[in-house]
Image 1 (cartoon, rainbow, N blue to C red):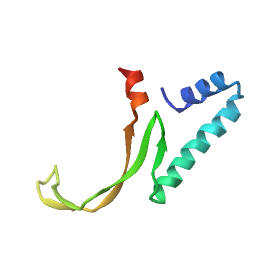
Image 2 (image 1 turned 30 degrees about the vertical axis):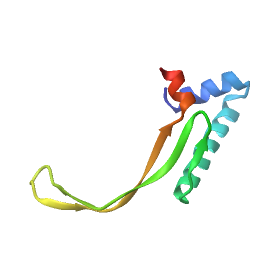
Image 3 (image 1 turned 90 degrees about the vertical axis):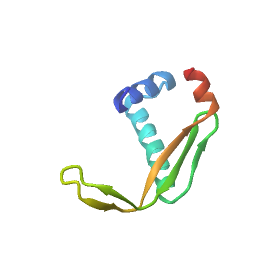
Amino acid sequence: MNKNDLISAVADSSGLSKSDASSAVEGVFDAITKALSSGDEVRLVGFGTFSVAKRKASTGRNPRTGEPMTIKASNQPKFKAGKGLKDSVN
């Protein structure tokens, strides 16, 4: 399922028009993105938790030349599925 499929599914299940469903889906994505970028966590009970994991700087190798190179520290988005989501998949 891609974003357009998700918008269509939301429109069908909620009775909204596709443009309203698109605005709703975009609004959810924007709210999650803003919360994560400010360092907050987004918990959706029964679905899962979006959070930010801090990745330390490390040393890697350039695959072409084999030379060692430094990989800088970064923040990575992380999702942990909740019990309700895990149970519905299994």
